Image: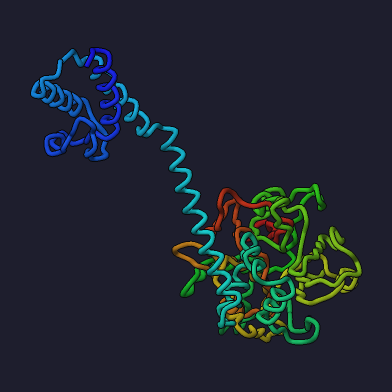
Length: 437
């Protein structure tokens, strides 16, 4: 065997072995490493493995009487191959980032699929009560209402909302039930009235699932509708806080609804529950159509609260000076409205409402919600509060993140806000009176 052929054969053997030299150094001594490298575990070699292998190979050649030449170049070759293989298997920052992204996306997809499956079971499952609770809650949240329409058509959602709405007594608001400045309490022994027309009182309200504040304004003429500078597609509303500051009002709460689509959350387009909006301020129609019927919540020139379905023209003809549209009606002509079907379970949300006692005092209610210390109130809760405080007529206002109460240019309730107070289309403002509390 000549020198050249020996090295060629040895190179070939080393190429074969370096593909399968064991990573564990002890494995080399326990492995049958033959000249033709037929039996070797498939593991990655390190430098110590290679040195040990070459030493054994040299000893074998000496025992067989084969010429032994320097193996340094073979050691270098094997070492380079092992290093290259090791480098291939190292985790670089780029590979780690890719794996993190893949794992995150996979987890999100699994969560989404699970969520959709759960919604599908709720909407198309055997329980109408659970379905109705889900749909009414999603629609009332505003931002999550699209979830109700994934497995249900517009007609099905509308039917569920109507079936779980409030049944309102028939007939128009009976204005004779309200006596502005009258007494709600009996006179004292001296026969003197306890009613102070300029008084303004704020009461803490608390229930099993909610807390909030009720403002009582004895003089209804102090309560008006605050508006934006203009309404329309490219217009922007104001926050309730700003409306109070701008009009130098002592207090305020939010008013009617407004467009809350992803493309327009500016409060520049007033809306009612039926997607049509109207605003009356100072006896003028600021927004809406004269001949369209709305859920009107408005005060007339005598300070009497009306909660009726009527056109804007009919409202103006009745002397309505300030009005918004929203709903549902909670109390009408002294009779509490009835929550239908599963409506009592429509959920706990931040709520606002307006009502009027028989003495004309206006009740402005705000309930905190979606918080650990106050989940919110249901329609039944609002009705109960209004009845307990003597409301003859009352109606629900826009809720959710729009609900909060302002007093002396400060927010005194705990609104559910992601960032900052929202721009709204309207607010109910309470004017200042010199010498009033």
